[in-house]
Image (cartoon, rainbow, N blue to C red; front, side):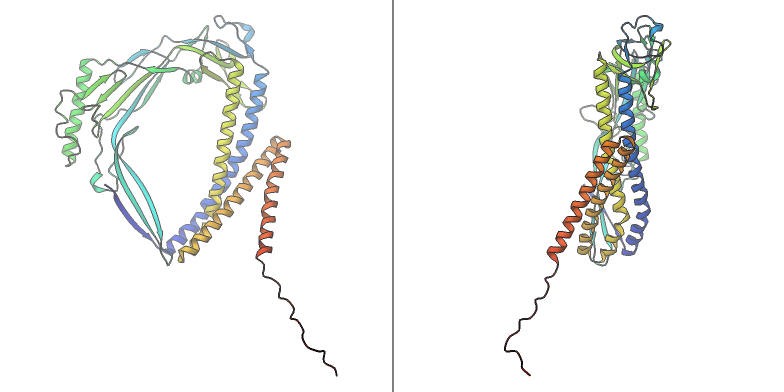
Length: 428
């Protein structure tokens, strides 16, 4: 069932808010510009670093003995990453020999979804209606329901076991032949697979008693029946199925407060790395421009494939940040000039026309500005391509200015014709 809340904002308050948004818009415009400039430099430096590394690496043919020949060199190597460490979950006492062990916790909760519609009124005020709907969903966090808009759902959420969150444990020592992987490399590897759970009967009983007490405390505190009346009728509220511990009556019929705890592990396996040999371990490669790299991947991969993947990642990040930067610039300009539309809100239909125009102009200017920033950045880092981008931006400006002149000429009023003379000339 939907719950709606309507509020009215006066014309004066809207105007005040729009002028306040100018400062925020300026900050966004500057931030977007800086992001675009920094991103271009980052991408160019990363590309140069990768190309430099591609020309400097050597193949490490044997990882089973420490060879002084490789000391300080950038190497590509493949082999088996193994560990003798046994990782133990501190809450459930689940243990395994693995490179890492992860615990993922999910909660069955009421989730609030909100949508807002605005309706401009003649005179400049606005009426905002926010509609809240509620749905039972699995969530990766316990949701605080005391602040829900609908009083019927306030304090409707709880959890059967408190103090249990996501956690990931890592092995301290992982061997790679005669070498040891460093901490960052350990954090980056591991083919994940399910970790079947076996809980002692005493642990199951203890957890179940705590879950049952949580239900009773919840009912005593909140005088609403959000939990099924027979939720404590089972002898146990803790069920183990493979790699999942389910806390609740039944996994097939979840109730608010139920929890789902999933365990996975990263097992030893073949890995490929590109890094600098430093004694019996590895460190990052530092290029001449100051950029560093250390790459490790699951499985057996050729060096060229790993470098190609790094180039692809760099390119993808370049375009993601470019698009983000352009949008931030445009949104910043829109915030700066939003007061023009707000001032016209006395007559909503006129304000809509102005708003469309302001949005279009801000989008065009923001896009052109972004192109210029990117071009100048490339001109700074790579002059040839930078000049090409400046020509593109200049061409766009020229085309738009030419189109405006044509439209002005088409819409200009026609010159009045001289009146025709009739009759005979007058003789004196």
